[in-house]
Each structure stands twice: as structure tokens, then as C-alpha cells.
Amino acid sequence: MMIITAILTSLMTPLLVVSAFNTSPPQSSSSVAKRVKSVNYFISRECNYKCKFCFHTQKNTNKLGIGNAKLGLQLLQHSGTEKINFAGGEPFLNPQVLGELCQFAHSECGMAVSIISNGSLIKSEWMDRYGQYVDILGVSVDSFDPATNALIGRGTGDTTKNQHVSRVLKVRELCAQHGILFKMNTVVCSLNHHEDMNEYVTTLDPYRWKAFQCLILQGENAGGVNDLNDARELQVTREEFDAFIQRHSDQSALIPEPNTVMQNSYLLLDEELRFLDCSENGKIPSQSILEVGVERALSQAGFDDDMFQKRGGIFEWTRDRGGSNDSSILK
Image (cartoon, rainbow, N blue to C red; front, top):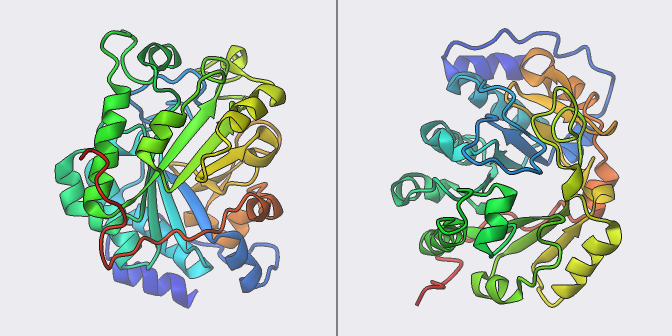
């Protein structure tokens, strides 16, 4: 409780009541620290795109106040979190909140900081102010064909005006200018599994390229009464996914993640700082870490730490701040 008291005193902002931090099943502190090294925090479900396969849909527009969000980061820090990934929704819909959390996580919590974005709202002004606190910036890149992006829902549905690819190139250049490691995320689905992306990927030269098999989760994208999306027609077989991976096997940054690897190997915190248990093919929220602490909430997360380790969840996630990591790709 001394840690919690110190955190509350240091933040000096209105916060939710925190209690019952010692009511979780007994785990060693080293065991908890091992399991929470890398955490993904969806700061909001708000998004400006309508990706048809999205499994974290805009079911609400809730988000925590900055004080409570910072408290959550400190609770994670004291439990052993070394890397925080901010995602959504589209996190850049809340640029000031995102920037302040990046700064706090880096400067006050000593965490490596990464962001996953669709790339449409990243401004040079934001990068000038907050880029110094970011280690990795990931952008969702599902296709380099404007028509395919329009069908998926990345950007405008007008294939003649879809600007997603040009926006990705601009973000890549901004990362190079600010020494931020550039990452790509691709969802392999029925609309893009046949595509050959090698030329563009070689040009973009990402630090890491995650390729995910399109995943269906009940309550989000399974076509149910309460689902905002129906991605069942976008699913690909394991053979189709593997063929996509084989086609790009010369890309050294490529990290394939089929459904069996992806589903339970990520620690996900929602907009209320609740871990999301995906082990039953849906998303069941834990109690908030603000209410019961990280240890107890973690016991409700359905997290597969062994799979996290096997998929290479631990890697060099801190950029070199002694100089730029990358040169410009637009020379």
C-alpha cells in the first residue's frame, strides 16, 4: 500500500478510488513482473476508419482522465511493465492525451513507448513535440492497392481518392526524421492474401512487420446482434495465410502470427484499464487495475505467457537516442 499512497501523492490529481490491492491470489512479485513486461493500452475505442475486420470496435467513446491514466501507468511500472503500447481505436484522435501519456511513460516511468496507428492523423507538429518520447511507431498497412484499402475500410471508400499508402510513406519519413523505429502491421484477409507487397516493404524497410491472420472475436466482429462488424467473409484459411507468409519470406522483419499464436498472447488493457480475456473467443474484461491492482486484474486476463515468449514478445524495443536510427527513404 505504500507504493499506492506514494503514487496518489505524486500525481496530486482527482483519481478513482483504489482499494483491495492485497485481495488477489498469491503470486510472487517476480512472477507478476515476468507476465506484465509488455502491455497494450487501448486509450479509446474511437476511430476515424471503418476497417471491416476490426475486433476492437467503437462500441463507446469512453476514455479516462489524464490523472487516472497516469496512475494506471505507474501501477504497471511498479508491477514490472517495461514497455507500453498505446493503441485504439485510433490513438491520434486524442493527440494531447496521447502525447502526455507518451511523455509520462518515458520520462516518469522509464518505459519503452510504442504506438499503433492507422497513420491518417499523425502530424509533424506532434512529432516535433512528443516524438522524442516514442521508441516505436507502428502503422497498419493491409494493402498497397487503393481499391483494396477502400474495400477493407482503410480511409475513404472512393478508390480514386484513397490516400492510405501516401500517408504511410509520410509517416515513415517522419519516423526517419525523428529517429523512431518504424513498424508495420498487416491483417491478412480474403481481400489481400494474394497480394505481393515485397517491393513496397523493401522500400519502407520496417524494423518489424507483423502479419496477423484475420481473427474473429464474439461481441466485436462475428456478425452477432451486438457486434458492430461481421468479418466472417474476410477470414482466410491457415493455408492461405501461410502462402502469404511464404511469398514474403525474404523479408527479414516479417513476424507471422496466425490465430493460434495471436489470440491470447497479448496483454490488452481497455479504456477503463481492464485486462481483456480473449481465451473464449470474445473479450471478457477483468476488474480495473485502478480498483483491484495489477496482480488481481492479471489473474483474470486469460494471458498465455508461454505463447508470448514463443512468439518473440521480448525484443529490443528501445530506440538508440544517441542519433537517428534510420535515414530518409524519400531521397
